[in-house]
Length: 50
Image (tube, rainbow, N blue to C red; front, side):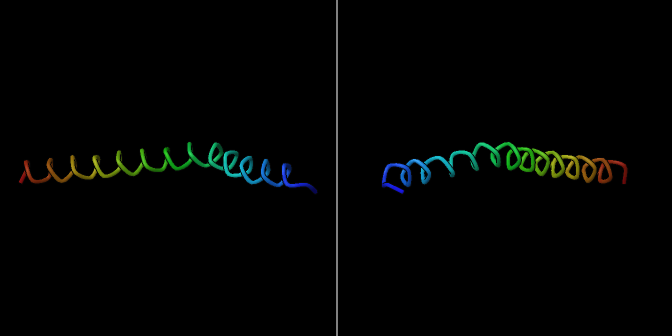
């Protein structure tokens, strides 16, 4: 196993994992933001009706 294959593997594997995990992280982040906004709206509605 020569140095070029090692280097290409070292650069290739993180990019593949980033490509796989980036949408997952983005979806989780979007879901978290939407959920917190939803909770804020519910609190505002409850405060408005009381």
